[in-house]
Image (cartoon, rainbow, N blue to C red; front, side, top):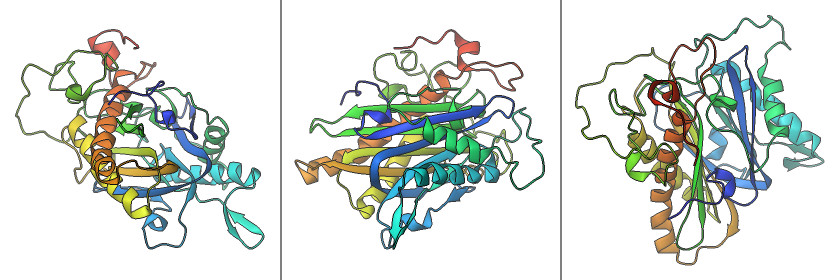
Length: 337
């Protein structure tokens, strides 16, 4: 497997990603959309998730495709970002057709970033929440190229030790199918090994996409202690493929992709995290060998997600008032491949 030309989830043809953030708020929104509706599913393994419209992604639900997926900061307040994304889709006359009406289908998930030092004291009125506007701005900005690190829904993200962020990665299978991952890393666990600069995801690194340091000489075995409280930590992700999948197959892809979280963050899937993975399939390509391709898809999605998590932390940028150091500030300048 090799990375796609951008090493982003948007190497999957037709997918676009947009970011928006508010520097004073220290929070933001990231939206994934496409040229046409796409199959999607989700799998939750964390104990404290925050979601919108995820029940309809089950294989037995009526709606078979969605129009966009958003990832947001703001904890439960961030779920309001979905209204802004819906407004953008409605302006394009997109959505699930019910007679003459179209209803945009926009699942989403949030991370907790309310205690990261940003100004969360927005006015107490029905129209005061900043998240609908951030959702609309992120949707309108959706494009093949987008920023990583301190951007979008990862703008105010933190981890157990280092500043988190937004990450993405891609790979192309021998069959020509493209797999990609998009992630907001706001985890309870660590992306790096102990006090070293080495990433847990190092065995799957492509080139020098997160420093090229290789695995740590030795991984510490001490039992970890929680550094955040219940509900403060979450890693939320989207994995994608340009193959034609059913909703049931997409669900299995999301299940397998969770291995990438476990490879890149220690510990992962704790009762205090809200870890979840959406999966999307654009259906642009058929599978040449359904057995081999299906077998490889889960591994590719997990690998891409592990790499995307490391890239998110590696690319985080320092800002005045940060409560945590960045990888860059603690271990050296980022070398962008």
